[in-house]
Length: 320
Image (cartoon, rainbow, N blue to C red; front, side, top):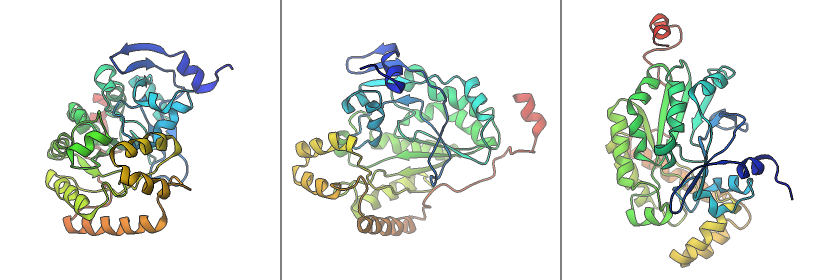
């Protein structure tokens, strides 16, 4: 059967590089910015890569490889870099309202190991550094983001920028099992501190909060306290969203590592990828109490950048 759409593009992708376990490709993309569905907190997304080398067992985005006629296990071993030249990003931004919110890293991590080699995320950020009046959020598990510290500060001078560092657990052993190729939690906390000390808006996402693994009040309280001490301004709370593609990986992983929990997970997500409303309500109340305890917000607060639309326009145009 002939391949069509994204599956055809994947099959025709140019090989960029190969490591012992991971192969990198260049994949064509019609656009860099993609519209979201209604009722999302942002209107546009940017994911510089398809696939993610971190290999998180719970990742819902594995379905994107199924679209390319690939196995869900290929998600962490076949990484596709999108073309992301700064001038192309700026061209697309011209068609987007400045009031719209743009999120980088909603499906795959923009600072995964491929970024060290191909710099697609940095190229995108270079385009935003020449913008003004944008609303931009970045989500990552990687301390590699501090490589771009000065670039991020430049963006934040003229745009509303928030940075979300995902830390699912402070338990190093559990983190290594769940997120086998992601940076250690301690390195992520260090990145939070560096970003906060640089004057950037930064928060911690404990997402996804895993039932019976990372959802206890003790575990979340400890993480929130460490996040606050590192300079985080807010603390998210996203429960596990277990799509069928993720169940293919997570459930066998539970059988191998936490067999007593495997049956519980099968029951919890037997009829839906979402946690039940009762469980979500309990979790929400727990996290709200912890936020109050440490003076953390639920999400980033808007701020007025140093350079905003209509202010110091002449100096901005000279720099541009």
